[in-house]
Length: 201
Image (cartoon, rainbow, N blue to C red; front, top):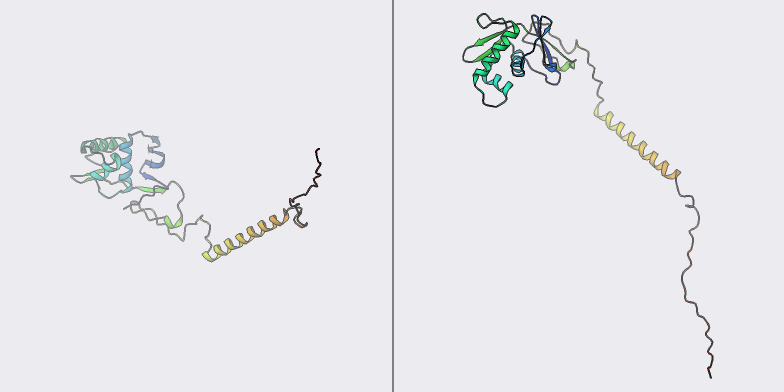
């Protein structure tokens, strides 16, 4: 079963049909085709699981969430998709009905990432016949990660430099009178004033 990468997204191509979910783009023979969002959601699920039978409940959940809807709306959406893709129910080239179970996308689907994937995330596409790409053949753009011991050493050196700079700054801006003798403030005292007694006669 093909796996989806919602963080990157895929571009699906089958014959002259191109589907890019991230851009909500559907083209056929180079011309843009407009379909309702629910039909588009069903088409994307069918393409993601191309070659596999996708149950009706899975398609209903993907397009309508967990709301209760009748299977008739899915039948209408499938009909709209077949019309948009130039397909027909009696002789399907793309969407086949699996009676009482669901639907299957039977066209040969090729998919490419719409943005570059890291080498360790490239997976073989079982829905296409493209050549497999291995991690050794694909250049990676991620920078190498240093070992943990190197990161701890770098952090310790950085911390020591910061402490040394702070110490130098505190010494540089020492108060100007730091080396002088402290001033002695006069202590309050009692002063005895002579009192002259004058006899008042």
